[in-house]
Length: 226
Image (cartoon, rainbow, N blue to C red; front, side):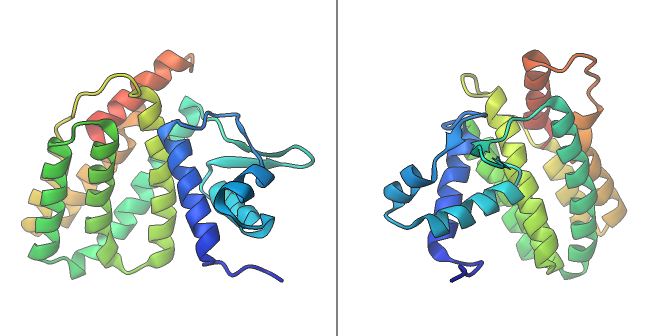
């Protein structure tokens, strides 16, 4: 018997594991064992396998024949790829959201930006940052597009947390405020131009020798500009 795509147990497992992977609680390369996870959540292997498929679609795990499932690693090239994909898709979403934008929605986005300013740690800031993007993009009413963007945000969060596990300084989201100002003024072209630069700036960082230092520089730029 197949499991429905919206199986609540599979969703709960995938979200819990995603949080652990994104925060760095589970390291890149670590093997995820079906039996251990099934025992932890008090379920069979079927929803665990569905959870693994969800995580794989997000780019958080890799399934290898005869080897099982392990947490995916990432490189600076992947940081750039995700940034460019986000830029293209978020601009598309914002263009479709703009006709449905209201002052109330923009006020909610501004409050999310203020919450980011008040963040006491990287996790709180990332949640506020993601909320801002979700608020201004959701009016596009394109669920598949929004799902893809949300998956890319999850991958971006891994990059962010990897660079700020031991140090944290809340950035000021000037780009968020510039996007809001443009939207309030009816300047969609200005808003999309700032959004595109804002999301993909990390991809412009020159890095001839990818490594931990360069990855940290990339995640630093993300905290400044995402």
